[in-house]
Length: 286
Image 1 (cartoon, rainbow, N blue to C red):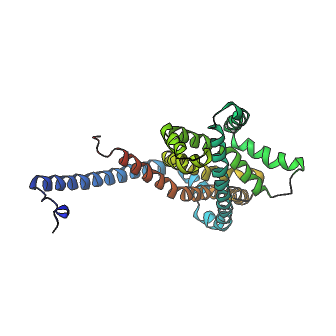
Image 2 (image 1 turned 60 degrees about the vertical axis):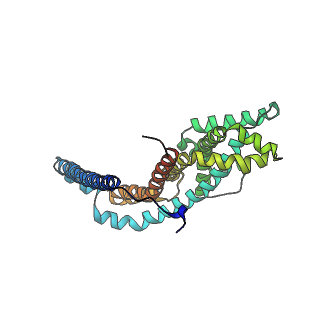
Image 3 (image 1 turned 30 degrees about the vertical axis):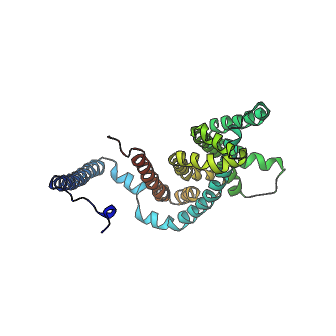
């Protein structure tokens, strides 16, 4: 056997340490599980013993009403997913463009930098629901654009608003790349565009990926606001069912569906953040 492939034998002390760590991990998991169950039982008993629980249960957690509203609400959720898909693509393209413009150097680019800065200041300051009204009802009123659905205008409003936030995330990542990376790229003969595309942007994206994933989770939630334009999405479908049955259970159903839609990305964000933190702390004592 080659000497390089041989592994030194594990000492008895190290084996004892590994066994102790496994024992501590098992103990921690059991304690966490028991404490969680006890906490959930206490909260449940407290809630169901309140004087108004029966009325709240009937108005918000009626199983029959949820089953009846399910087809319309799940069909509306598919509309939200479609809007989210196109909005994410639009936000990524527009935000990278704005971030790149804001990082341009030289006085000749000042008008573009000022325009990009004004854009981010404006759309980060206006609430999304107002942007939806302005875009969804104002732009069609100009009669400068072909007639489109409210779903289309809601997607445009989401792109305009979230591009302002995401562009600042990208800009922070671009500015976090050390200037020596740009200088090295330019010394190899790359122009500014090639330097940004090949050297700077890949490093910037890795640095800000957790923040980008959090913005995506926020967009998954805010996509339900397109209902104010009359789009029959999950929220509007829940509103229709609530008005028909005088019961708020469809709203709870829509909320749970949005949670289930966002949960995979939330867990992926937590996993990636922990993985990135562990990789950065390799060789350190925490």
